[in-house]
Image 1 (tube, each protein chain N blue to C red):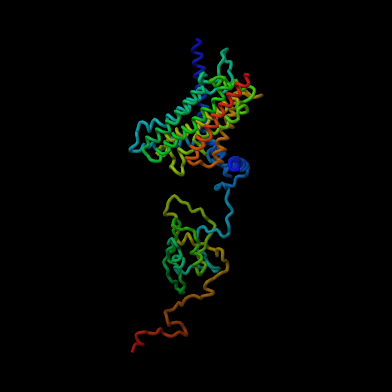
Image 2: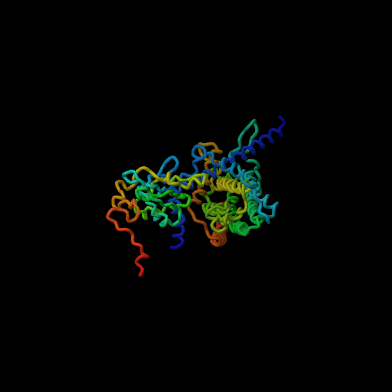
Length: 331
Length: 176
């Protein structure tokens, strides 16, 4: 078998595996969220479809697929149809740079457990996370509905307020790891995860990704008691489903990013790397669900205030402090 | 200090939700498990009989008048022995709000509430219950009560034809 064929087959296998695992995980994350939220509110959660409700995601997909695909009369048709795909695709694409395990030796080849180890992985992630808001904004704008438009506008301005501090919280990580590659960043955490080295950056990044995921307490774009359903008010059927799945894929992505940047990625004793990585990501996802079950929604201006006046100065200060510390250690 | 209070107020709820996650579920999973219904539960209405097995209802229309949603309708008639009863009696349960005012209005304790609440139906016409379906062969929650023992049955013969009774007065005759 020629070399290039083997390599492309391996890449295809990796892609297929990631695609399958990611979509299944997203579907079951929905179930897990409903179950965990239910237990937090002393309810059992979905338990009708299959044993303990395990077939619920399947039933949801069937329901979404068979629902009417409705396009409002005055909507911008093409944008309206494209936007949900954009939301899901940007979320899926980000996983291309996520290293989910140590390099594996297969057929005498060293296979890195990452689709593409970009040397600018951090920037790739930041870029795609900014692009992700386009799906939401265009969807909200194309719907030609006041609620959807308001949700879209809120999403955009929310993006501006958290994205800066999110990027700045990653600067100390890059300074500590001396690389933009996610694999190198994980390697640099072999001894101590960065969450312990730089807890302030960890906290800022954690808050920023909660805002990035557009979930409670920062779910302003879809604040259902003010804006019906926010940017996806006019969506139905599988187009709504794509937004929905995109949100949960995004959740997994952000969990992986937090794991890679601050929790030491696949590093961990005894268990294989992939298992450690999954455990950490699932724990972060649980934390997200826990936050949703606990905190109320912030007001719109409170988020802006928090992002611009607290998170941004703190992250800037953190960058300076980390730089000073690194210089001092070099002597 | 206010910022300390804010931080505490943000952290504490997490503990509350986590603690609640491990507490038992309070939901009663209805078709499999049934809630124990209070003896005073106001469910489906029934028409009861007195201890002699006769219908208690005297078709006085009081329940129908008391009903805030007008779901009870009937037609009064009189038997050979002068005993009043309903020729037909109809309750529209898709309209009924189960307030129990009819049972409070009923002078003969004929109409009563039960603990049955499973009235859902695919055909709305089947939620209209006729007298035959409403009538039960027991005394309901008031065993031993017989209205006619207190009030007596109405006169069977025409007016003035009973023994010891004067003929009815023709008011026109009294005119000057």
